[in-house]
Length: 284
Length: 296
Image 1 (tube, each protein chain N blue to C red):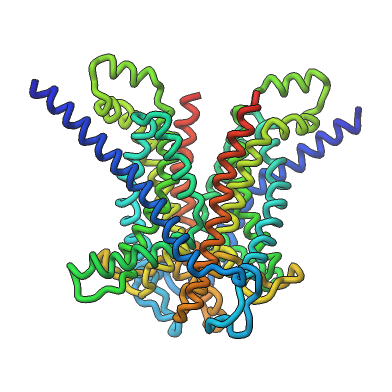
Image 2: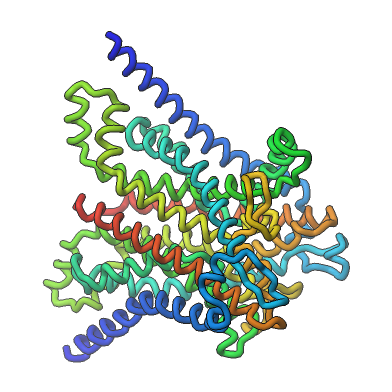
């Protein structure tokens, strides 16, 4: 009888703890999102997102952070395209050309996972060194390249996971029709489309939010970059630099920039869920 | 026909090179960072660099101990905060929760995972720092700005929760259902099954997942930089400011070119970070792969 009682109490205690942990997670999400939204909306105005920093911007006068929005979009857009171009062939190679038990595939996957774990500040420092070596200064190009390197591991590994459940029979069918491995690419890409979409959204989210790696490579500027060799501002850095200002109006802009960044990231994240749902319904 | 085979061969070769580039990049990073930090390694002994707390870049003295200790302190607090929360959440989601709860929790975790580091930094400055400086610190000391090890640790802890939960869920869902059924059939309660079957079976996986998250926490830069206080010194408690390695690099990288050895010293900091993260990642990933394979 004593034993039975103890079991029941134990079960209850654990369940309560689990519920508390869950509520804490929910509470944290709400706290973070609410903080950013409530502070950001107060500071938000059309001017913020539609104009460049004016003359007295950093002492609280007119202007917005369009430079950061555009800079971020340039960098993220270009590195997503580059990332896709590199990643799809690698995923295809790992899953179609190599066998499941392949030693090479194992090592490549391990290397990619390690790269995924490398802190973005190390990417930044490494990228900066490479740029100095080639005589480049902080520029849009540098930012794009470093962000591309940063997101490639995410791209590849997310798509790779999606491709794992890829039905081998389809490959066999294409081979038996006389296709070479390379020619099955069309079939594979169509089959893993939802995986590609999810990976893209994840990578874009990571790319747009990363500050440490673009700090030394893309730099910061008040104007819009007109060529690849000019520095470019980014949203995370706009938040970071303006938040440390002693002037309240400037700090407000940091909140507004944080709101813009959060909204973009949330849309991507929710979009990701919807896309996977939509696609996976039509999967074989 | 020939041209098709030629195309296939070419594609094979090009893709092999692209795949090998991943491995090459890891080696390249290690080599690059080592070469760049070589001057400072030549001028000072490794022992002195790692275990001296004299940090005077103007005089060419570089002791990384305060920064290393800062990183260790912050990571420790983060894990103490995140581990129980994540473990309980993951166990709840795999062992207890009904589908509708999962449908609510997964998007929440998604959001937490998606938010950029700088947003957590803003949240830390607006929420965590004031709580510490007004509510917690006054019980222990006269004044605290709130920019402390505790603040950085909590912010970091929140950031690694989604990673930990998703790794744990992966590990737990590899336990065969039959094992749980067998235990339940013998009359064990759900918690007894969880503790004595699921957790025991996945112990290595749980450790590997934790190590992986530790390495993630160590390299986190912007959020920590915003709330850590950035005071050089070995922290003596959680209510003191600290200065972790990533913050050191981020704060000083632009302006170091005028001082001899300074750039090399910062590169050495990046090298330490890279080396630790590399080792942690390699070990934990290999363990996690093995677990996954067993299941197949």
